[in-house]
Length: 229
Image (cartoon, rainbow, N blue to C red; front, side):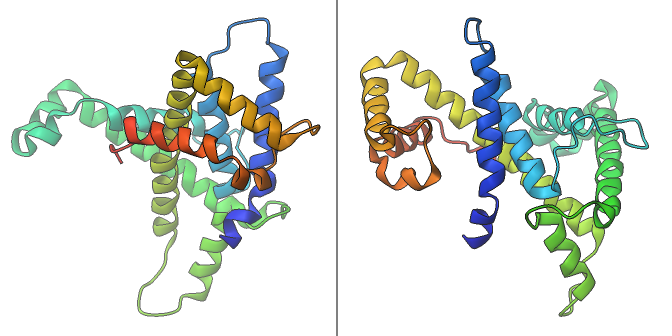
């Protein structure tokens, strides 16, 4: 929990950025799916790597965000290989899916390798990110298990692929359910306003008092469980 609290500034900053971006186009239709995906994507990358790598030019010319989103899309796509392991690989080769998976993996692996290699040279931030911790473990090398950069890249991939889509999807489902159920939405709004009072925004410390909001989120998780991971 101590480590989770250390990333509080990242969560606060990115939520504020999201709110500002929505307020700037308040008179227009907002695509919540894209907005929430961007929020979760940025938070995870900043916690893991210390930066979102927005606009970062990699040696391979690839884009980290696009490759990560591509990996998620392919993981969620229908795969004959999952149903028929023996003949599925042959079918995947003919359909080109296997080539796409290999290409995405190789490009993503190269980008993560560069990000990890360059990490010690970057300017120290206000918090210790996940890669800082993993690089320290690699340097200390205690016990029989040899911790390598391949392990670091695998952990980073697991963090992103398991945490990004699941988090943004449950937020999107919760918002959509609230829009369709005005009675519940009104009760949530009243609870938030009562808790926040004259302050401009909700603080993480307020969450313990937002009991009804927690029940709404738990209900969303029950109706739309993120079981694919």
